[in-house]
Length: 106
Image 1 (cartoon, one colour):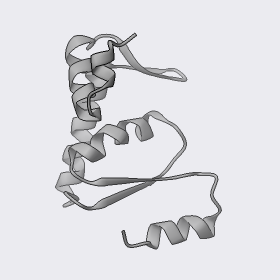
Image 2 (cartoon, rainbow, N blue to C red):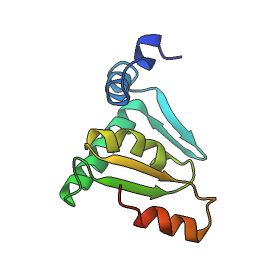
Image 3 (cartoon, rainbow, N blue to C red):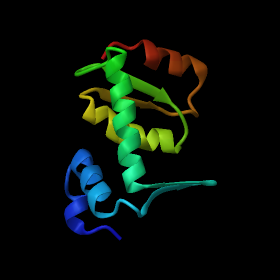
């Protein structure tokens, strides 16, 4: 259980504090994969760095079509850290709707 002061912070503060205080505790358990809070924090920093290296930055929209997987979970932290906006697209939508969402100018 995480203390209530962690839950009330923003997502970035939450992850940074969880990585510091609970670094060796599991943050993600998905099928055969388990990641600690420290590993999750490191992974989100790497993805944020990758977005930046592609020129994706403040105000840009990052869209992802994916089920609820560790990658989608990590984007919940990565995207705000990089100053971008996350557009989660439900995998159950039909191809036409996904196409419209991807072409939409925010």
